Amino acid sequence: MGVFAYILILVISFFLGSIPWGLVISKVFFGKDLRDEGSGNIGTTNAIRAMGKPAGYAVFVLDFGKGLLSGFIALGIAGLFSMGKPATDIATAVAFLGCVYGHIFSPWLGFKGGKGIAVAIGCLFVTFGPIGAFIELLIFAVLVIVFRYVSLGSVASALACPFIALVIFWGNWPAVILCAIVGFTVVWAHRANIRRLLDGTERRVGESKQSGQQQRQRTRSRR
Image 1 (cartoon, rainbow, N blue to C red):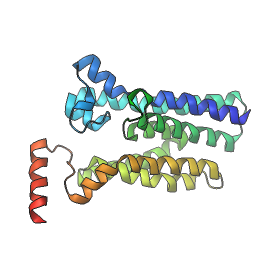
Image 2: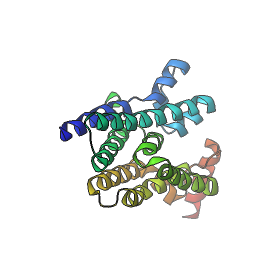
Image 3: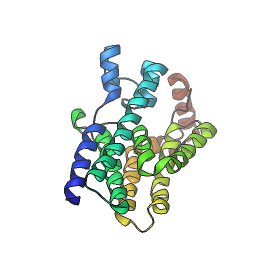
C-alpha cells in the first residue's frame, strides 16, 4: 500500500503543480499570453514585468499555494495510510518532486513551464518544515538583495536544497535523493539564466529592458 500511496501523491502533486497560473491570469485579466511577453516565462518575475506587481504577486501566491497544498495532501495521504515518520518524509519529498516537475514540465504547455521556485518554496514549508524553508528563503533573499539577480538567488537556493535535505532527512536516503533531484532540476531550468549571468547580460531587479540591452552592448564591446 505504501507504493500506491507514493504514486497517488506523485500524480496529484504533479497535476496541481502543472496549473499555469501565470498564463491563466495573463489571459483572463489581461487578454494576452504571458509566454509572448518579456522572457516568455510564466513565473513571478516575468509576470511582474509584463503585467505589473499586483498580478505578478498574485502569480507568486498561487504558485506558492499549489506547492503548499501538494505538501499538505501528502501529509493527509500519509496519515490515511498510517505511515511512520520515515515514510511520511518520503511522501512529502515525493510531493516536492511532483509539484515542481508539474510546474516545470506542464502538460498543458507542451511540457514547457516555469522554473519552479515559488512552487518549490511552498512545498518545502511542509517537506523541510518552516525552519528549512526559511533557510532556503534567506539564501534567496540575501543574494537577490545584494546582487539584484533573481536568477542567482534561485540557483543558489536550489543548490542548497540537497544539503539541507541531508541534514533534515539524515539516514533517509530516498527522501534526500528525491530532494536532490528537484534541486538539480531547478538549476537545469535556469540554464539560460546561468549563461546570461556568466556573460554579464542577465537583467537585474528593477532594471529596464533598455538598460539591460545597453549592458549587453557594453559587455560585447569589452570582448
